[in-house]
Length: 86
Length: 86
Picture 1: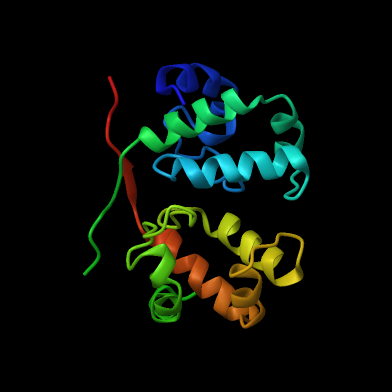
Picture 2: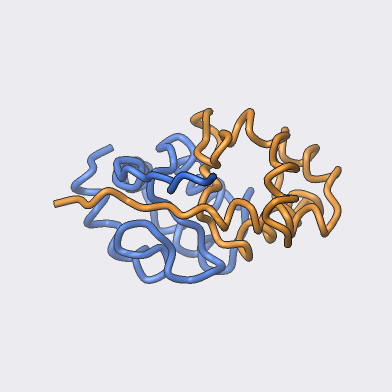
């Protein structure tokens, strides 16, 4: 998908998933750095109803395949690092 | 939960989710830095069957509540950062 288009479409997601894909709410996952394959699969599962969530099931119904690919490209384009642990 | 205990129990998860919670496989999510609430909710959903995945549904059946709390504590203890984007 298109990263820039995905970033624009992600404005609707930012309220829970944060402007840079780090969740602002404890019951929402971080999306930054997740693989595009995984993200697209989850959005399609919510859209199809094989994965259910009171908010995501509704949000996903509004998404086209292109929207899903763009959103997946945007979030997977974000590079995440984990602080080293002794 | 107990971070150290969770880290030990996470050995079983590392093959797909990586030793530090950054997924090694594109169809597996990163777990590092996800909230303990979210992680525990997903493991319980897999265990209860309200979320299904061919591997995770089996893995989760083996987990006690304490296992879930420890795993959630371990992965949520990992600090993730997103590289800034212009």
